[in-house]
Amino acid sequence: MSCVSPAPAAELSRARILLSNDDGIQAPGLAVLERIAHTLSDDVWVVAPETEQSGVSHSLTIHRPLRLRQLGERRFAVDGTPTDCVLMAINHILRDQRPTLVLSGVNAGSNLGEDVTYSGTIAAAMEGCLLGVPSLALSQHVEPGTEPDWRMAEHWGAKVVRQAMAVAWPDNVLININFPVAGPTDDLTGPRSVRVVRQGRRKLGDEIPQRFDPRGRPYYWIGAQRREDTSNPDTDIGVIMAGGIAVTPLYLDLTHPSTLETLREVFS
Image (cartoon, rainbow, N blue to C red):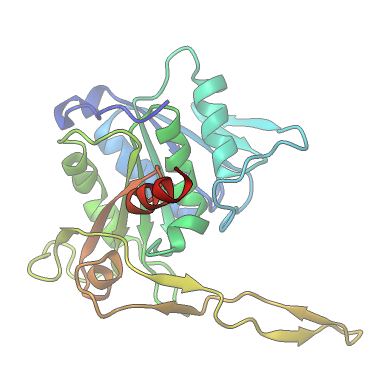
């Protein structure tokens, strides 16, 4: 099943909104997302992982049973991945009245460039999309060595969601939203504005430090070092570096059209 066109922004007050994330049920960013969602609708449900699941991508738990724990009214934790959470929410918890919108985040750290292929935040929105629910992922950029400053996401989150929901999206599309480090939250103009741009290029894992445990045995750590292209202002990376909000539609059909035609000629 593919995405359906989102409801007009005016109908958001009647929406049933499902929230999830990859930072876990106790994450500060999820609390920010709850406040954002409650400005849009009163019918808000939370189904999020018991523990942090950053970097798990679109993985699904199939080799062990899942545990579901209810923490309060409309609030649940799943001992699995973000994908598990959205799947459980839509096909089990809310099966009698499905959500009309999925919001994932707010992630502690941006999801730019190739981050989207690793991100559990994106994966939760991806699963919502695959289950036929309009889905958006929200992430807050964090400078290395600093704590997240949620002011930009909290100030602009509801407005950007409303704007994105004001138009119909094609099938198999989810919306990826990244907020910059906080500046004047009421003044986004010029390069510091809300911009709709394509995905940039940013790759994790260029440096894999080797270290040694107390017994002298080596181990390795994939760190946060990234190789990224900051030269193009018209990408999600370029917008965040300029202090703006990046809005990027992501398409779930990974087929490359021109190569498809080339290979058809070879195999015909």
